[in-house]
Length: 127
Image 1 (spheres, rainbow, N blue to C red):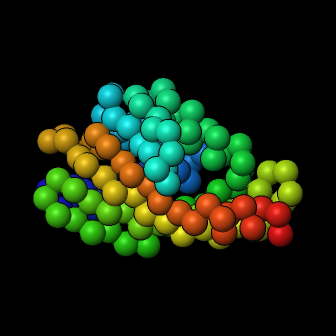
Image 2 (cartoon, rainbow, N blue to C red; image 1 turned 30 degrees about the vertical axis):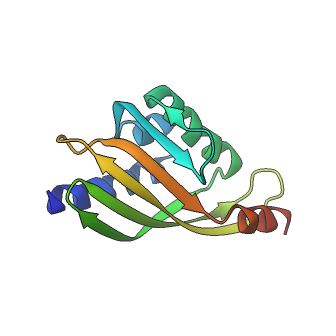
């Protein structure tokens, strides 16, 4: 399963870099969910696609890198950095974070808990 999760992480990174919200959502189980910084969860692929679309709208040149992967059974931590420019201010952004994934038997994400420094993001947006 470790090799499969690593391949999923590589493909997930590529999905974010494609700019396709639907491609990002396709990595989630149909009833999967993501919650970011303990906020309101996005539940189901359509909602997850809407979440990704929001990121793409805010950072149209978003470029994601996978900084690492930690795996324990059907649980993984996906460490990432994204760079780009804020759509309105055009200020450069460099944000680090991670997602904690629970995975089903097919390798789809059933639950993701994402984390990043929202105050640092807001500071970079303003410049």
